[in-house]
Image (cartoon, rainbow, N blue to C red):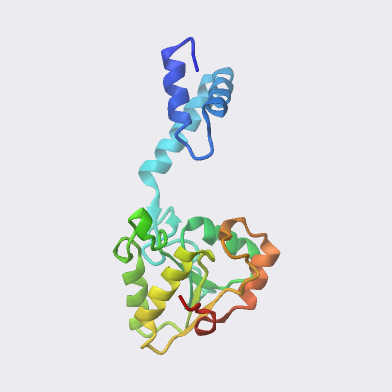
Length: 206
């Protein structure tokens, strides 16, 4: 794609690095920004810089937060004995939108995937196991996507905590196999939470 300006080309190249943004879409976005008042672009730039520099991760659950402890973990009305294990912050948002979960979360930061070079040590699994060892957890709900990687991660964690007196469950398979949690509609996702099943009964023989 031939562009009349090197500055424009550089901006398009950077914008196209974002997921789902091709060169044509990037060009459309950049040209839109050029039409806006300069201060609007500066506000956008400042917001992105502040987010990148100042964003924190909750020391309790590892979700994105503006403070050391996120609003969910610091909420005294949440049941901290029930922990819902998810892959990333998008899943927290999806589950919170159902309004049906009153426990807390634990964000792993990914799923075990040998093909992509992601092993247990690269995820927040040890911190979760430590919470269970402390004896203040009554239930772990596995809410990872129903993919091979998600099931592998669930089973790995289950093996780490099964000797402790903690109930393990998984969201009901109203979520289609292979689907990502964040794309499920709120009603289906909420029902999957309410109708969760013991994890032991969901283990597939491989």
